[in-house]
Length: 197
Image (cartoon, rainbow, N blue to C red; front, side, top):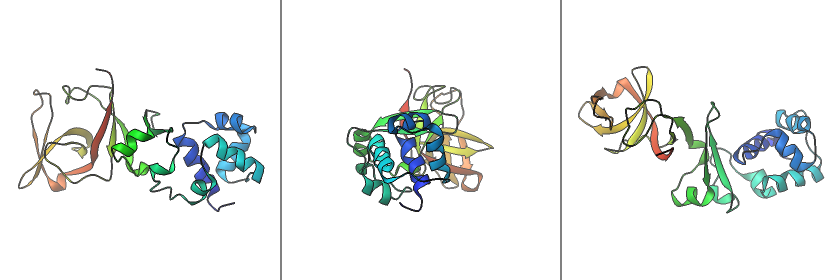
């Protein structure tokens, strides 16, 4: 069995959107047993490992050899959904085929963020969930980015200028903010929106 089995089990269970209890039920073991596997206090027998692979719908080769920091979505089953979550429990669930089509990988570079307020109200609405690509922070003028500015996270359209960039919001009641490069951190580009219209 591979050295980082516990981390791999946690990772693949999470992208399948299964709780420890749900995985335990599929495998035919107790929830405590899955918990023990994930904290590394025990490892499954080979027969149980095969059941885990079946429940996770993944091959032994992918489970053992995938680089968890840059897992290739094409390694997953074609009909699989990919679940992106944040620390608040917000989820965006997308079909693998959609992620492949729009090159949304590696999975580890994508984070879920909940929109707050009406600053982007013609495009993004209060409560919408957006997927942020942390690896894409090179400014393309007019694209939407999540920034850390003046002590808070703000989403807006960025436009380059001589001193840095200007952050504009789609709601006209919010004035553009001129930003010197040292004053802000671009956290990533908005690549997907989920919400009600």
